[in-house]
Image (cartoon, rainbow, N blue to C red; front, top):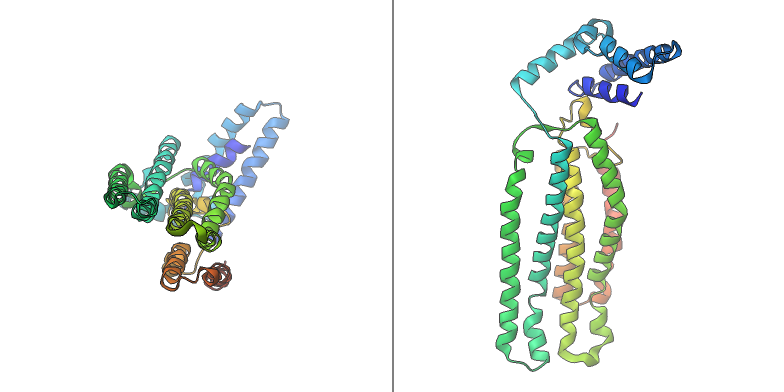
Length: 320
């Protein structure tokens, strides 16, 4: 039966995502299931029953009149002639996620190096070493970070077609990606939690170990660097899942393949704003903290931001 359901999804993938089409799809599924059960009851094996059902109900053009979908099918054919969507296979998607993880590691490490580069002069001064060594360490970190950013920019060009060309995936690939995303959620939650905690409480070593002298600020920057690394890496990987699940045309049945328990916002502006919400909060937190040096107070930004996000999710969510 799973084969029949997958075949039905393929048949309706390009159809408009309207109540009429959904109703026709459910009716056709019921007819296919009845026929399948009838064949099995008559002694046919599973493969033969599936083949018979597909051959009898597998042409949507022939069933258009019975299902009342003549107009919708004609519109789909006209649209397909105007816009050809590139099919992205499961193998390509798997290769894409390998590239996403590699790219996320490069960008996150580059950002971390930019943050901790200032620790070179701090450590050199604390150890009373040659100041030039600290400066060399600082610029070496910056150079390595720039190299990682450049390499990432070159490598991601192989996947620019996902942004520039109309693409689509089938339901099997979409289900695979959703399962991968669900399995990754626990890891992402831990990485975000640890990253936020490191950024929010990076001031603790400075307050608790004053006796270490000028070496303490280096600890602060290392904690922030690691925290931002975890936040950037986990966010980029999750964004990769989202990009693949959003490939299909949202106006078609296949556009619903990407829906899981994600919040759908009422406008593109709201979606764009919420997509950069946590990076913006992180930036605000760091700016205020470094300007005021009141790390013992600025941590309150995080719980307040969590409450504000919940309110925005409720306010901006699209109604069914």
